[in-house]
Image (cartoon, one colour):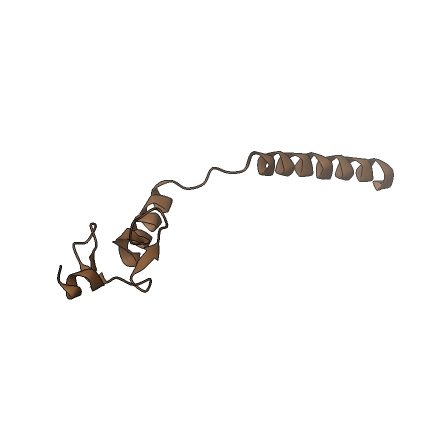
Length: 88
């Protein structure tokens, strides 16, 4: 095998050929050469695209906290009005 071919790695995503280093490919211990099959640029682009298409679901507790806070504020406001608003 040609020595130059062993020092280069092909990206299956963009069909580019880059040096077989961690500068161009993410590490992947499950691969025989220890590097991911797609280059860093392609991997980051795919991850960014996926994250844009699949936004995280809102946390269920956040909605409850907002409701509880609103109820608490309304309760405090009503209690304050009962105590301090002069009746005409």
